[in-house]
Length: 338
Image (tube, rainbow, N blue to C red; front, side, top):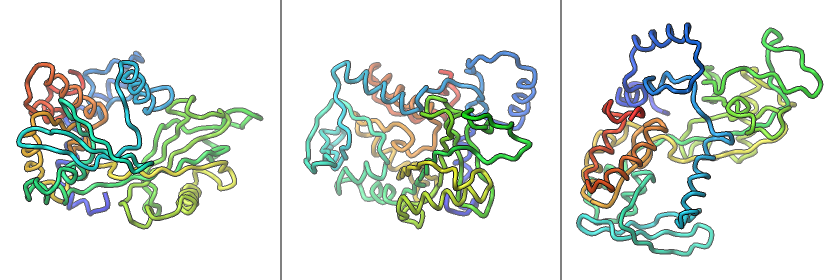
């Protein structure tokens, strides 16, 4: 998170392990030892303890590609590469939105009955202009985020100790460790996590005789890592992978770099005053804040999606209260089991 742990409130941890305890963890471990079923039906399992789940064949993005297909099939329109530059509002209603085509620079205006925002709260409030009350603007400006970078590395093979691998046959798939991702604890590297995409789904790696890794870094937009060129960042990531003994430089076949600003909403900065933003936005009857960034809440993906589903339920029922949306992942009744 880029700050000493003493500056991070316990709320952050509580958000991620809601309902979890040492007792539940031990009971889960004992049950796991005797379990024979391989079912993915785990409605009664705490999110942090889930070990088996359905994974999209081509990765999580496939869910949203399918969602986009269904929207278009039903006559909806999706505007990619557009940025919200202004959200227009009056009294208790949002009256329109102005967006800019990032490729052409052209502005367009849209009007709707209801507006859902999953954009970072700091950007949302900024887009609403100077008529927003000053305490709300100050709180939004002081919200803190942690940014994210990934170096995707295509390798011939991993470098495993002889005790951990079998002798490779010619043209046989490379030996892999069994993990989907690994948190890196070594203090002499900046690398935070390694994903092994072959293990998530074999369909995510075009050539089964290669290994595709995601080397993940938690950083701040504008810092030394973020400002590196793609090639310098790739070289840096490869050097750290070599340093921890997971691969040899000569086995790197290809690479890509992805930067994701505001990937993680943080619970410091002006977060202690976030209630002024919640109160202000809740007064706008046709505006619904949803998702991790939309609510500045470090929810799991399932809970983030549930906030959108609850928002739609509220509209259909005719109840414009936002309380149920904010209750997701805070009360047992609104957990993913619902």
